[in-house]
Length: 70
Image 1 (cartoon, helix red, strand yellow):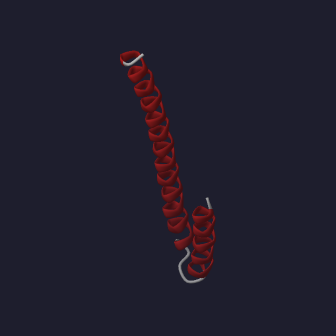
Image 2 (cartoon, rainbow, N blue to C red; image 1 turned 90 degrees about the vertical axis):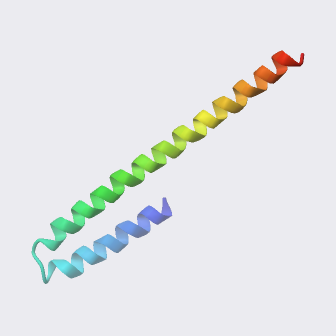
């Protein structure tokens, strides 16, 4: 989350600096930043899903081992 906040500040500074020299810079930077946010959120979601799958696997494995060796 801290990295995401730092990126927001970084992009805000770039947009502010570039918008004085290039009227379309703000739109391009915001598009790039929105793409970054969407990608970041997808990666976080996939990581959370993977952690949940690993937890289910560990629980299932534990019960299987108990069933095999009562």
